Structure formats: structure tokens, C-alpha cells
Length: 156
Image 1 (tube, rainbow, N blue to C red):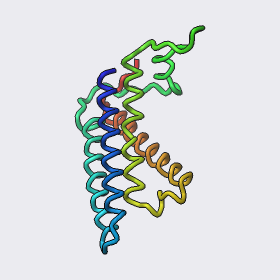
Image 2 (tube, rainbow, N blue to C red; image 1 turned 60 degrees about the horizontal axis):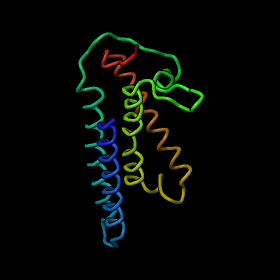
Image 3 (cartoon, helix red, strand yellow; image 1 turned 90 degrees about the horizontal axis):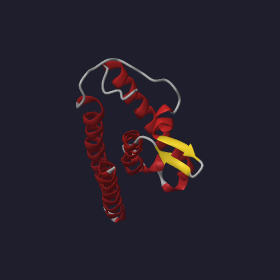
Image 4 (tube, rainbow, N blue to C red; image 1 turned 90 degrees about the vertical axis):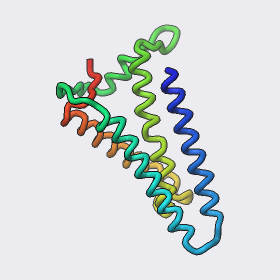
């Protein structure tokens, strides 16, 4: 769980720094500020994409191609309903679930930074739906690559 906390703090610090940089650039009324914001956002997105690829695909060793197609199986394996509430049955799986969610938090900050017209504040619901759709597509692509190349399935 310490790993989850450290990664959560890094993600939150990244998003806060991005918000500060975005406001400073957006606040300047100089010519080319939008281009600077887009270039900076593209550079951050490239670094973020490399980080995701290195953790989910490039840094893993090939193994058996397995899949567990039971819907939300890891949530049921990590948590159990008891009379007293919810009990954690697998701290490892719970940490994996939390890390998978945290993996896409920077994307929610980067996409509006890159394309404020599509993800801007005037269209919050639409922007959130677009970010969720992009994150879902990326997550599915990662899972398909991991399955296709036999990389790191924790199916049990």
C-alpha cells in the first residue's frame, strides 16, 4: 500500500504542477501563448505515454497468454462484503486496482491542457465524457497488447 500512496502523491503533484503552468501560460496575453501551451502539453503527453508504455508493456516479460473474462473479477477477489462492511481480502489486488485508476489521472489533466476548445471549462460534462472515452480506449489497448504479447497477466 505504501507504493500506492507514493504513486498517488506523485500523480497529484504532477497534476498540480500542470495546473500552475497552464494558468501562467494562459494568463499571459502574448502572441503565441497558445502554441507554447500546446507544445508543452504535447511534450508532457509524450513523457506520460512513455511512462505508461514502460510500466504496462515495455518493462514486462513475456509469459503465457491468459485471460479472465469474468466482469470485475479482481474487485470481487480484492474486496468482500461482510456484516461489518467491506473487508479487504487481497491487498495486492486492491493496490493493483488503485494503481490502474491512478494511471489515467494525468490524462484527465493533459487532454484539457492540449485542447481547451474540446475539453474546456464551458463544456465540462462533454469534456469529462471525452476524457473518459479516451482513457477507456487507452486502457483497452493496453489490455489487448498485454494479452496479445502474453505480458504480465495476474489472472488467478
